[in-house]
Length: 295
Image 1 (cartoon, rainbow, N blue to C red):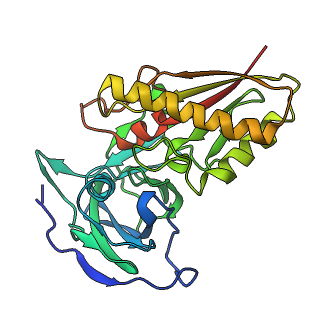
Image 2 (image 1 turned 90 degrees about the vertical axis):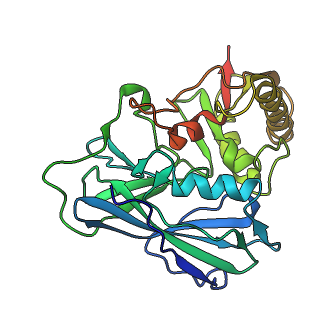
């Protein structure tokens, strides 16, 4: 264990939107922040990731509330998956100390910062990367030859769907009668108000649903296990109702809806590893609004 990597890249001015040319594009999270993977390479049996976060919003953000949650999800919860073998590596931590750089406590509009993370190396020439509540970055090329013996854990069947969110605009169809909507795309953290990015996800779901003959739709809200049972139950119901209202406008007449909130009671992914470590990528999968066509 090398201990905390205390050196982080300093705060720099972020290029204008459209001028970015990262190694791998990341995807926006709440509050106008954009994460991206700049580099992935192997050093002495460890996979090192360079990850940057840029503030593309119009307001400064500080390490209170959402920003702390977002950045902690990267520095302690980043995950890499070898899609060929199903092996997964997490940030190397011992107790409260993790082998990752530190983001600054504030980012002004137009500013960016980067950190280096050290993770167990699952092997593979290409990995998928989960960055907490940000959308996963898939197909990241890793510099250096794969290790003779891969580290990390082998995913259990329950986690086999760990990083599927390459779905269209935050909407993933499972067969012809079910669509899962990613609530990290639909809503800001802790909110039940549809975000500016929600329209594309709703449109993608409508495209699937309109092609089916059934006209009764279940809209089920789900959260992860963070927070109280009561708060999660209420939030999931409010989010499901918001999605129902948006779908009703797009689908038109002739549709009926069954709206329910289940809170954290029906997870589809494990939120801890077999060793009891926190698993942010699993939590991200559990935060969803499920659409299911009924008979």
